[in-house]
Image 1 (cartoon, rainbow, N blue to C red):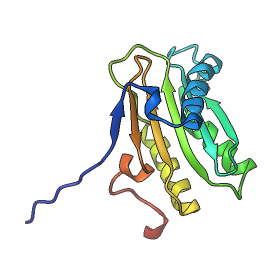
Image 2: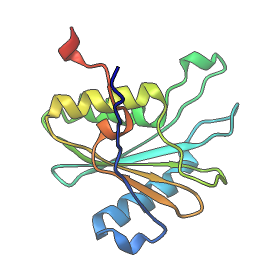
Image 3: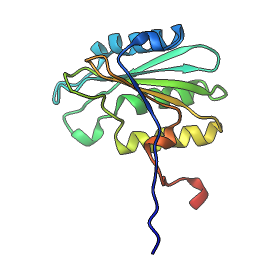
Length: 157
């Protein structure tokens, strides 16, 4: 048996000035939009925003339900809207923010990672991911597949 190693590269910063103006606006929009999250049960408000290749910015939040499995994450709300309404546009960057005092940014859940990976593969172009914490820490991943190594995809079907 041979030992193997997976490596994931990402960058971390606490400074918005490390980003260009469009990414600064994306991060600010994502933070402000968290107030629209519907999270009366968990009080875990998540927002996401993305930039399309045409420069348009779209936003989404998590929407909970008393029947917990019926709720939907901010990332899937947003990506579903983008794919449905802008089918020929490619997602360039997505920022995800959790409005809770935590020491680190919160990564997407497994369902959201799989959804993001599917869109990235479908559009045949990497999607940059910015994970934003309330304390100002930002993690930058160059592609969705960095968040889900050894992922399942349509090539297996």
